[in-house]
Length: 245
Ligand code: G3P
Ligand code: MG
Image 1 (cartoon, helix red, strand yellow):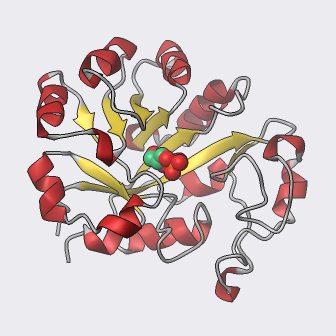
Image 2 (image 1 turned 180 degrees about the horizontal axis):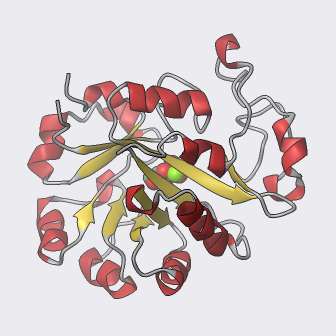
Image 3 (image 1 turned 120 degrees about the vertical axis):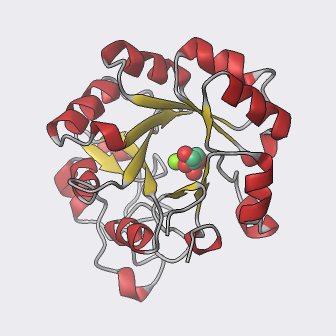
């Protein structure tokens, strides 16, 4: 059965597997998500790798910044053991490995360019090149909290779907996002209401909210509540709450 909302597994199916690992992405697709979200960074030599934090410390057995390590060094690390023994063999995926999961399928991938704390030089060019190389351009939304990056993406390839991420409560976000030229609004769920969602739609923008911080664990927002809000989809750690049986 088709999902009523577009469901993205946030960092994969991160409610049941270690975030941003191949296991989490595979589980998201298997659980009936329309796609998954991941976060990308650049290694020391400029390879695209998938991890949420700039630092390795929280989700791997390594320490320090991703930008200071080579891909070979990063591939030695365990990115699943912190979550549970069953995942001890998971490594930090490259973007290529993650995208390979959706080649030839209908599944979507939201690639978040993680370049707000560290402005990775040339990350937009590299990601766009890989998307085309793998011929998945129609399945991708590129998003970022760094909205300069979205402008750069639009400059490089105006045909790609792009989303503007934000956590604060913006005044008339549809005006801001339209000006940037993005195709969707990716707000914190706490920053929007039905009126804002309707205005975004009137301006031709899709609305895909995410749960900020621990809000998803606290709130148990239902599919019906999201439908009443009028949003087009959701980034969730708990796909089973929103996917159709
Ligand atoms: O793209 C939605 C969400 O991933 C944004 O926040 O911090 O989980 O990357 P974060
Ligand atoms: Mg993200």
